[in-house]
Structures are given as structure tokens and as C-alpha cells.
Image (cartoon, rainbow, N blue to C red; front, top):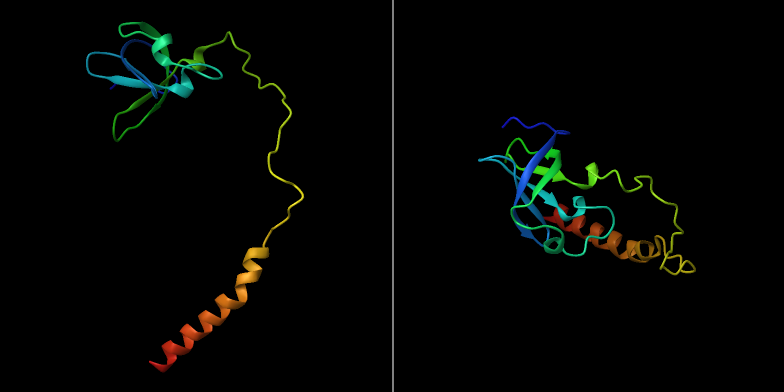
Length: 126
């Protein structure tokens, strides 16, 4: 296998699954473009974007030396999108007024300590 990480390769789509697209790189080597590497942002349905037999230029992201699986990316080659993340306001959905912290542990600690001491005493008496 003569492929390297970071290498641009042309391959042919051989299969489409909900989680990714299988691409034949040559007669014996096949790679996978995971759905997260098919494009920027939300990717709705891969079977609407790709067809079996379609020729794609992909980038080698990773090669597992043990299993010889190759991870591919289209997203890394897409220069049409702005690759700098846009600042967005973060929304926190938790209730910030509740501060539990270590309270549950503090409530159970006396019982745990008592049980541990009992277990130790049982071991000494055996």
C-alpha cells in the first residue's frame, strides 16, 4: 500500500451507507469518507449527494497500519467554505441556579466510611 497521510487521490464511489461513502482507490484498496468528512456543516443524505461510480478527488486523513483501513475526506479539500469558525453565542440549557457540586458525595460519605470500617474489622477477625 503506497498511500500517505495528506495525499490527494482520485477514487471511485463503490458504496453508500448512512454513515459514509466507500471509495475504491485502486484494484485492491478501498477507503471510507465518514459522513462528518463529506462536507462542512450538516450533511442530510449521502445518497442524494453521491452516486456509485462517481469519481472523486479525496484527501487521505489516516491509515490504520494494523487493519489497513484508510480514512478519507472531501471536507479538507473544500476551499469554497470559510474554514474559520464563526463566533456564535453559546446557549446553556442547564439551570445555573442549582449548585449541587459535591453535596451528594458529602451526604453519602459517612455511610461509606462506616461500611468500610466494618469491612476492615471483619477482615481482622477472620
